[in-house]
Length: 355
Image (tube, rainbow, N blue to C red; front, side, top):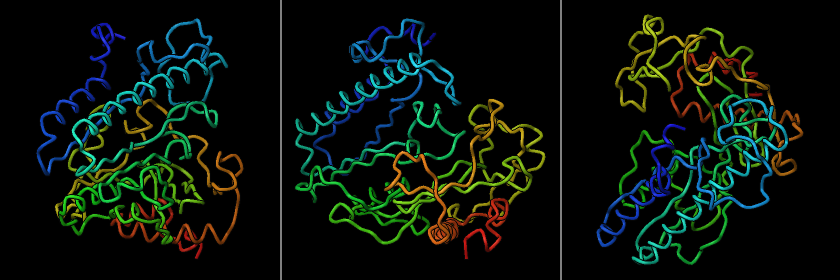
């Protein structure tokens, strides 16, 4: 609220300001070659602060105070309050859409389509009262949070605009895709893979990908089925953090945490550089513990996204579960996950993989 006192016009909002910086870059560098621009936008993100021109009459009948920052928890608002939060979020998405359209206008203006790749994605979704939840992190890894958008354009596939692909990708695939587009060798430690071949034609190779938050549930999916793996006690001892930057989201590690630190041999992805190994304390100020919360509704679940896209009816199927667990085991193996972490999650027991 204090920050908004200093914002006098739309151009000063974070989203428009970032887009405008990108427009200046394109105007100045459109004729150059081998440039890379990452436009990192906070919006649409809480607080959902957006000019009134993006609101639609009739979306909400709310007459109370500002409702633009729901807490990460169970829905407790009235139906009118829920409608107001959702309407404000929708207005913010409309603002993002308009400015993204202006970005595409710059592609038209400078004829960037002939030699420029464009990739659009995000880091996560946000629950807007679906499953009776607001936010992310504390609840199961529902599709609204983890099934994020990916749109990609490459001049070599200019005639395929508007086509959809069923190929399964995840965020680590973006970096090797950009490297390949620039003709740069992909480092051996990279575990993602370029999605450029999938722009040419659909690819279905039985791949699985995973989603997780440190010390919380792990999700694994093959695109149709998604499995949520949980532990009995998320605050149990035996979990460690490996880092060279002992910093939580809202503050540094405590003296108590650092007292347990020891140097640990490096991993594949650190190119052998050692890291600090620190006991993951149950009261550490990491997500979602930093507000005194913990994970809720966390239980084993298997969903068939084709038959149940809203994830309302979990199922059990031993064959599917075993296949997803085997895929997860192979994936975690390629990621050089510490053996101690595997044991903490119960993956040292052969039955955990349905074998």
